[in-house]
Structure formats: structure tokens, C-alpha cells
Length: 159
Length: 159
DNA sequence: TATACTCGGACAGCAAGAGTCCGAGTAGCG
DNA sequence: CGCTACTCGGACTCTTGCTGTCCGAGTATA
Image 1: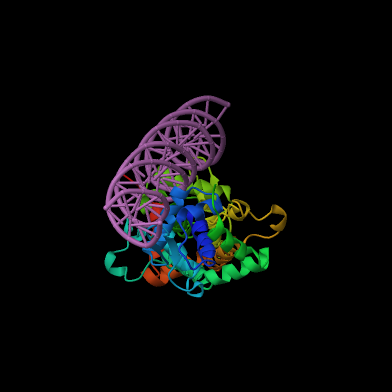
Image 2: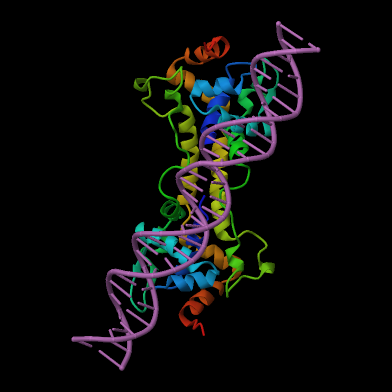
């Protein structure tokens, strides 16, 4: 799993606090990570339509939809790619006892089992939204945590 | 996800047919894959205790337990490593608004959600055994498929 | 209209998986 | 009892994709 998923999720939670666009540099400084690399993850999110970018002097990134309608699955698929983690190379059609291609109407049992497990994983990710994460942050770190982030985002003037 | 998982699972299903040790070279020829690389996956399975190796002239690999008691999760953990796919770098403890370490008694909400999804994935993998896969192969390719593999394993004399 | 600030895609660096090889060890056979 | 041939086991190299960085295109602002 790509490490950028963690950054993208935290950024989405942070973007919940501000309806105005937030520059990528601010998000990078807030999380103390490489701004140049974080930009790549944000571009992936923008390409997937989860966030939209506005250019210009007071530009940045902002969520396109309500946090309740953005699931973790959306973010993971945007950053790590939509393809399944398990790839079936059709090993049954190779070797001296190869199954003829005409008999392969459905995926082989191995692929079915692995893809079934991935489906369960996707279902669990789709059941959690960015709004849920923001709520949990409030209960964990206290209700003043997210407003403090909002204030820092608008008021931080790096000398 | 490592591609060797597919090879390892197919090998386990094949090993179901023979109670006698099967050399790695035979398994590689049967699946038409690199024997040198397949050895690495089999070594991982042996290290995890799923299969045991016997050396010598008529040596090879054989299952240690009954196929009904070997789950897909066992194989995946043996090949891909037991660590979780999502790694939390404790991003909340960095940056100007870092959460103090004393307040981090439990994992952050992002990690909890991701790990919960992985737990669902693991649960689905643990619900399927190698015996289930072998049964599904029988229903898919006909009940004579696995006995044919067994016959090929014992009788194949590469000229 | 000039400017400064933003995003966007193109460019190196590195670690982990993919693939290969040869030596240690053992069961079978003369 | 010794030899041989066959097996596994770990050490080595290579490629792919993630990690990290950079500069140019575009736009809202003053």
C-alpha cells in the first residue's frame, strides 16, 4: 500500500475545517512533510474529482463534495489506483496440464477467493466517510482541535 | 500485493493431491514458471510451518497440516509478511499543531479505520481453506482434474 | 498591465520485489 | 561403507515502481 494514502486522508480531514481553498504548501507545513511530494497526492485527488483546485494568488485546494459523501474507498482508489491488489495471471492456462481457454468462463477459484476478500475490504472502507474521521478526531483530541487547525490555516503568517 | 502469492496458493492446491514430497522443479514445470523464483516462495511457506521440506534423492515439499486447517490468510501472511499493509507514521505528532505524545493513548482515527478494513480482509481470507479451493477446482474443471495432476506428478519422466 | 502566487506535469534517486545462481546436506544405491 | 545424484537453502544481481524534487504554465490580485 502506498504511503501517500495516509497523507491524503489527513489532508481531507484538514480540508473539512475550511471552505476556502488551502494551498498545498500550507498543508505540507502543517503535517511537516515534503510539499513537493504532497502535491502529487493532491493532484491524484483532484484528477479523481474529490477535490478541486483554484489557481491564482489566493488559490489552493478545497473539497468538491460534502465530507459525508466522501468515503475512504474514494481516497484510496484515487491515490493507489483503481486496479485490484491481487492480479490473476491465469496460471491455470499454462504448463503441460493447462486448462483450455474455452473452459475458463469464470475466474479461477484462487482469484475468486482473493477478490472476494478484497471486496470485503472495499466494503469496510466505503462504510467510513471523511466526516466520520473528523468526528473521531474531535472525540479523541478534544472539540477544540479542529477549530485550532482552522485558525492556523487562516492566520499563519510565516515570518 | 506480491505476485508470488498466486504461485504459492496454486502450489498448495497441487500439494493436496500428493501425500508424498514433490520437488520444487516439478511444481515449477507444472505451472510453467521460473523454478528458481518459485523456490523462494516455497521457502517462505516452509519457514512459516505450512509445508515441510525433505531433502535427498526423493525429497521435496509436502503439506504439514490437513488442507482443511490451512487458510488463505496463513499463505498470504507467510509470503507477503505478517505486517499490516497500511503503516501509520504518526503524522499527528508532527508539525506546528502536533498532538502531544501523552495524548496518543490509542491509534489515530485514520489508522483505526484503515486497520479495521484490513481486519475485514483478513477475516474473509481466514474463512477460506486450501481444501475449499481444491473442491472448487473440482467443480470448475471436473472431478478428474486433480487426479490427473496427481498422476502427472508421480509419472512424469522428462526425457 | 505588471506581479506574485498558485497548480501541473516532467525529471532523478532509491528501496523492495523479481529473478538467478551456486554451495551445503542428505537419502538412495552399488 | 563410500559414492553419487538429487534435493533444499541462502547469497547475489537486476528491474520496476514508489519517493522525492524541480521548473514552467496559468490566473486572480493589486
